[in-house]
Image (tube, rainbow, N blue to C red; front, top):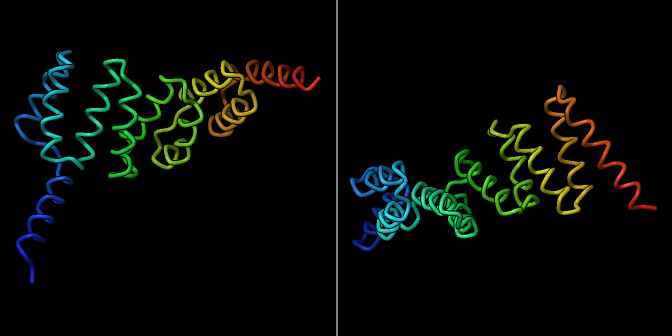
Length: 175
């Protein structure tokens, strides 16, 4: 027998999984597209109050925070969205870009296997990740990323000088 409490919980869970289609949500999208980010964020957060586990709205709020140069806040929303909707290419992409924007290359790299499975990983994001790692002195990790890039996309001769430079620096550090 389904109780009223169970029915309410099921409706709430279904609402959290539904795509965002309300007028308030659309207003938020329209505001974001016209660059009114603070107003868009306000609309999205109101929508989030009624649907707190909706991955789509969490992702959109994360994107707004990232555009407002509040990337550390954005990461929190992307992580929750990814937890609620694992395997979403859009959420993973946004999370990796935000990690890179905040210099968290290792965290971005942790997403690469899943991104590769979704066919959204590309050589450019791998190269940017390696550059951040080099600048942070994480030469071995940068080298792994570049080698992965060449393994996936062999015709990247422009990476060879970068790899040689990293190998030289690593050899110098050993001496």
